[in-house]
Amino acid sequence: MGASVAFWVLASIAVLAALAVVLVRDVFRAALSLILCFLMVAGLYITLSADFLAAVQILVYVGAISVLIILAIMLTREVQRGSPSNRFRLPAFFVAVLFFAGIGYAMLNTPWQISSTPPLEPTTPAIAGLLFGEGGFILPVEIAPLLLLAAIIGAIVLVREK
Amino acid sequence: MVGLEHYLILSAVLFSIGLYGALAKRNAIIILMSIELMLNAVNIAMVAFSRYIVPLMLTGQVFAIFIMVVAAAEVAVGLAIIIAIYRHRETIDATKIDLMKW
Image 1 (spheres, rainbow over the protein chains, first blue to last red):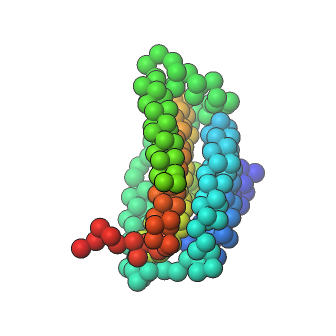
Image 2 (cartoon, each protein chain N blue to C red; image 1 turned 90 degrees about the horizontal axis):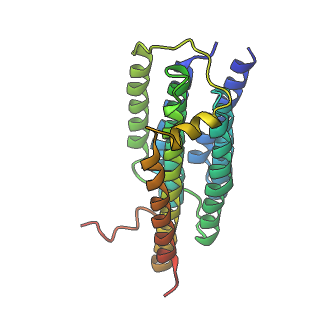
Image 3 (cartoon, chains in turn red, yellow; image 1 turned 90 degrees about the vertical axis):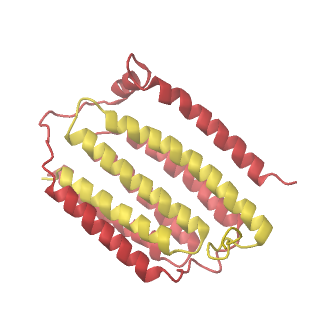
């Protein structure tokens, strides 16, 4: 009972915040509602008993990515101009609605094999075993820092003053 | 009782909102924010599959962690490109950044 109340509250706030991101005129307020949406997604991870992922979501998205986005908004003084739509507004709306209809139809009509096993709790040791253990994801774990290093160097090169 | 379909539909709603924003907005930062919204929607679907279909394997959560890593790299490079374009052309309007359009 409590879990479904939490789901409906978190989900409705997340959808409203996401709508505000694309509909609000002020770019800065759009960024703030994006942060609210990230927080609600972290709460949804907790209702899915993914505790480690909720902490990572708050650290990475709410902590780091939102700061980067707000910094970029401050550096590019387009705040006064707001966030207008281009001339593809109606076609984009129809594409989004069609996409939602198609994917929703597929989701509701697929016979998912729901498992009745209760989920693991806490998940952190299990995820560590999967990431670093035998037969796990050790190669992607080693590639991820290379990607991050390349991204950091690329960002520095791109914004460096000549 | 909340089930797998609820989370999947929520994920589809968030993804569609992000799709609309990425297609219909002119400000490049808003487009990047919409892409972040879409990545978050995919993560919700991944974690919901992991919770309801294979609750003991957690592979969906590991995929979600890798998606977060790629999203962090993407947003760093994307915002650096936007700032570089703003320095050169004094605008981040995606309809006016058309140097490679013929």
